[in-house]
Amino acid sequence: MFSLANQAAKLTSVNPRAEIHGTDHVMAADLKFEIKVGNDVLSEFDPSLKSSLYKKADGPQGELITDAGHLPALKFPLMGPVKWGKEFSGYETVIHYGVSGAQDIHLIDCEVDNFRFDCQDGGTVAVSFRVIAHPEPNELGRLCEMIQQEVEMSLIEPEADKGGFEMREAA
Image 1 (tube, rainbow, N blue to C red):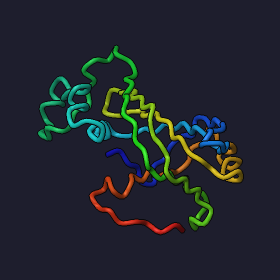
Image 2 (image 1 turned 90 degrees about the horizontal axis):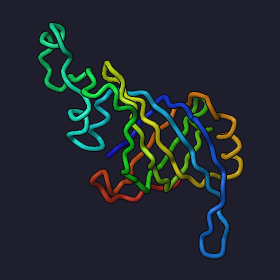
Image 3 (image 1 turned 90 degrees about the vertical axis):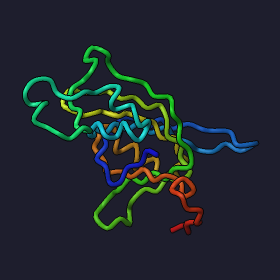
């Protein structure tokens, strides 16, 4: 499953809105992020996705590298960004803020979706995605201050998806 640990990301937008839960209106926000990572991340979405979009480098340089997983060249350089329809739920999103971690923003039970892969020659992928979260009012204000800035974030997959079923205590 897709996860991130202390990853540099650009918070491209924050869209505050309300959701209706029964008769209650609950604050929600759509947070859009973009990360630039190696193309190995594609394997977290599907084992054959990387080899579908990338190939071994052409020419003598490609022959020097013996690692079969080293695929830096785009197979289809004119294709453009690829949308990916997978949706994940139950994630914890952490925006690391400050030095001690005491000011980190912890958003629980988030949905992660709207993936888009902008594959680049050389093996880099710009991955953009949306996190649907329910921040507290003070957290929403801090998130809005971070729009169009680079942040450090973690996306933590649900405990049950890691193979364990232990409950985590709230901090």
